[in-house]
Length: 407
Picture (cartoon, rainbow, N blue to C red):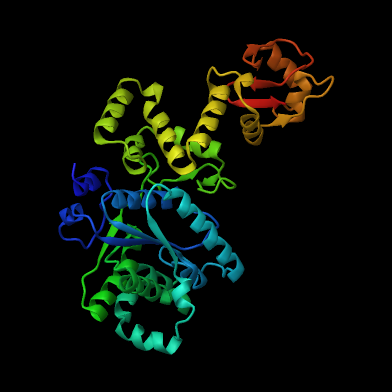
């Protein structure tokens, strides 16, 4: 399958200025994509765009990935925001930029990319020169026509400050600078960023008399809810393991909706059409087996966190929900398990009842007695009907989804 055809099949073609997508089948184009440090980690929303970048690079194009130190200082992208974000101090922005760079290096570890920070070229720009050389060529009419600007400055709107209003100009200059320094002629972005991205395209056309394009990637939508994909009950799904652990990350993919799972396989994995078609066929035959979700969780977790991390979370998941025994886990996997479920240290005289009540998995010892008599408690996979002392490391299970690790 040609690259342009694959992009269409995977549902990755949104709004674009490229008249003939088949031109992407010829290697050699230089593109960029960027992210502002409005948080201290990127999410799986950013991941969809970065995986698309990897596809472009594997198709023979050259990638530049940008961490927006300068745009972050200007407040970040105001598009889609009903009010001004809180100002972030410079030290925090710099720290977040470094975090983004580390995540870029992790995600793009299998391909060659150039990582840049737009603060590096903005820090030395003279304001008057910027107004004369760049602002002079920038149409205010286009900005005032933007939907979010109309909403913010219209009746009942909360207003927009000059920094937010200037965001599009700053992003446009990024594209121009990268064209001049690296020969970038294509910007990849989410379709919600398409308007901002075309400002740079127009600057390149006006100031360099050259053609540049924007490729907008559709937002991934949860078909079951109609909302933007990537939210769990606890909030966003982050790439930073201190915010979303590898286990939580894996579980998120394992529990995605049936309606959208094939689309997620197309967007978030590098499985071929034949492979995904076969998975879809097997899923239709046996939906309860959740083959598509299991393969999705495996592929995405491996891509983001690596083989070793994937193996550990699979082992832990198999102990909690499969046939693997606790004794089969190594110490690092036990430590991982301790971080994910209520845990209590094994001490002399510790009972099943103590372990359940001390961790809050049961509210009282009388509740434990009822659970025991109802055969709702198991220790290392064996149902128990009476309280007893615990003499070794074990996993206590209440019902189907509540656990206590005694370590």
